[in-house]
Structures are given as C-alpha cells and as structure tokens.
Length: 286
Ligand code: GRF
Image (cartoon, rainbow, N blue to C red):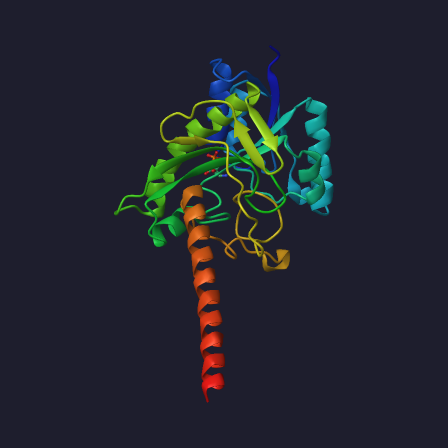
C-alpha cells in the first residue's frame, strides 16, 4: 500500500514532529513526511527534520503583508510537495478561513487539553485552577474556530495535587508523543472516517486513550480565528482564547452537564406554571 504523504507545520521545539518522524522511520506509521515548513527560521524542529533527511522550508510570516499572502505561500509549497495531509505540530500562527477550507479534513492538529475543555492558551494552569482530576491532549481535524474540529484521539493523564503547570505540561507532553503518532497511524491506515463534524475510528483504543468523538454543540461565543495553541493575541487581532470556554473534563461530563441544565430548565418552567396557577386561584377566590 502506498504511504500517506504528510507535511508538517511547526514553529518551535518540534518534539511532536520528532515523534511523528520516529513513527514513520520505524515503520509503525505507514506515512512519509515529505516536507516540514516553519514560519520561524530559528525553530529547533527544523534541525530534527534535516537530521532525518526530510526537506525543510522556512516561510517567515514577517515577510508577508498579511495573513492571506502568508497562507497563499504555505498553500503553494504544500501543494508542490504532494502532501495529502498536513500535521500542525506546535504551529503558532492563526490560519485564514480560505486556507482551512482548502485543507478541510486534510489537516490535523495536536492540542494540550481534553477538548472541548480549554481551547486556547495556558491549558495546564487552567486545568489545575479549575480543580480538574484529569488533563490530557487531543488530536483533531482543524476547523476555522479555535481548537475545534472532529476528534481523532484523546489521551488523558491524572492531575496530581502538587502539580504545577510545568509538571503537568511535561506529563501531558509524554502522552502527546504517543497520541499524535497513533492518530497519524490510524489515518494512514484508512481507519478514520469523518461524517459532518464527527470522526469515527475503526480500531480499539489502547488503555488511557479514546478514539473518535461525540458531537459537541458549538459554543456560541468562542472566538473565530483558527486552530491551535498560539502566543497571546494582540488586541488588534481582536480575539481571546479565554472566553466562552466550557470547562469539561471529557465528553461524558458534557452529557451530564447538558442533562443537569435540562433538568434545571424544566424545574424552573414548572415552578412558573405552578405560581401562575396559584395566582389565578387566589384571584378567583378573592
Ligand atoms: C505541544 O504542547 C502541542 O500540543 C501544542 O504545541 C506544543 C508543541 O510542542 N500544539 P513541540 O514543538 O511539538 O515540542
């Protein structure tokens, strides 16, 4: 079977890229990384790619007049590489709607939280501050709205009472390095199907992992923009990752929360109806 051709976009360290490179090199993942692009000329991940003999390209966003022009250059390079799938691996740029739509269902990202909990930045600090028992990571198809899209793989780790954002980040990073190669393997093996906004995966999840996702209602005020973790946005960009975030540990919590809020709504409506009936009775008796 022909190998899936993959391009990776990075901005920094590239430890997830390394995990993908290793999986492709040892034959676990039937894919070939044909190009690594960085928007940052100093990204350490570039050296990892060169070391593995993978072609690299720097497309420095600062040389472009706007996002559309930068994304057009990315698109040209990606198409020329023959890649059928893009893996965002710590790529710290927002992508335009056009670019995201061009690569719809052919672009995945890894995010260091159990989405839909904690899209955006500072995921580990927020998991600790929220008193969550579990944290983790998510590999998902990219949609225009920040950190949304059909989920392929999630892996979770416990949050310990003495965790700092740093200790939690390093525990999550360890599972990121398993979750991303797993997701890419499943994709390359043709085991992932997307139906609308839901991915289904034809495989058994290893312990501590979950495959595919359940439909998640859109969060109305989640900012639009793009996809993955990124540096703090400038006020001019007019967005914030911190708003409109439902803090849920996993999809089961989503379900419980929805059931609970349905119950509250029903109880409120019933109380109003009873109050009106009592009022009418009182009026009638007077
Ligand atoms: C990872 O934590 C990933 O989840 C997030 O950015 C970080 C990139 O790290 N999207 P690395 O460059 O892969 O080491």
